[in-house]
Length: 59
Image (tube, rainbow, N blue to C red; front, side, top):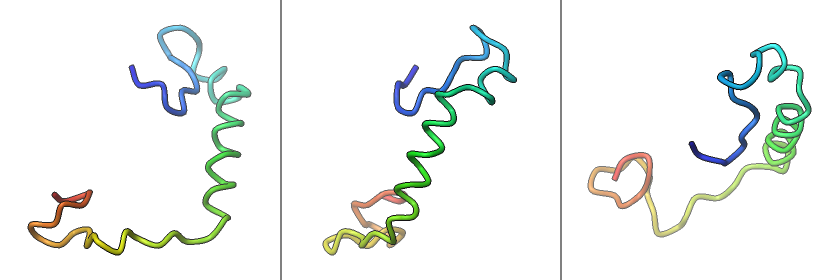
């Protein structure tokens, strides 16, 4: 299982506990901090969504 932004596992604890836990609160705060820091500029060498582009989401 990926470890990025891991907030809980419903096989190990109740969903209600995950949703009200500190791990989810911390992850939400981290996402909001990044989102509020302003828009990011795409890679100038990349054109996402363009056919034959080497960029995600369409390679």
